[in-house]
Length: 257
Image (cartoon, rainbow, N blue to C red; front, top):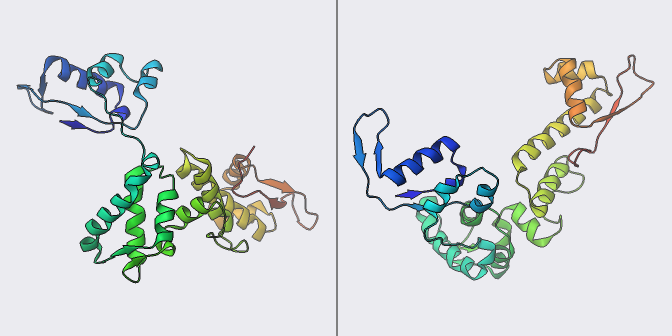
């Protein structure tokens, strides 16, 4: 029996799994009959269970039950020589599914694939190759077909990102920086980034008038004020306004103090 992501189990689920391993018996959900089990358990996780045991987040008795014969699988970034083989395999595997036939990967594209750190490991590689195959216009996988974030992360420059004058450049630049620095909260941080850009754009459009901005955004003025404080958007006084609302200034997606 293969148990994936065991490091994500709740304390209650850990207790239930331990009981099955110790007693070799279980009951189906909604059932009353006790069933004998003689299954061998193979478990997997990308978490540091030893550290979680020390922190009290994973049961030590369950950990030692499962840790009979540990196998450490290095991350993809430490197995660069495997990447060309995996690329060849996935191109052949996804071809019929996507209706694409790619017979070759350019040397520049392969350099990008090997040089990337792959924080999402093989699943991220699969996703990147699917994106590239969908964009490919011929039998050769070229660098420009690979995801923008991947190309930017490997090159270490913003050359692959939108022009600085593009309205979306702060957003893409933020994502690029977060990927390059390493993050475990990219989704939440990106949502906050988009929210700051939206609030700032509307406030600039209204000349800093928060009442008009709140109406345009479909929220109350009090809620807007809370969001302004939450995102650290600075308001500087503008004498041209009829009330005390001011011109909005913000560093957009830069980390807020």
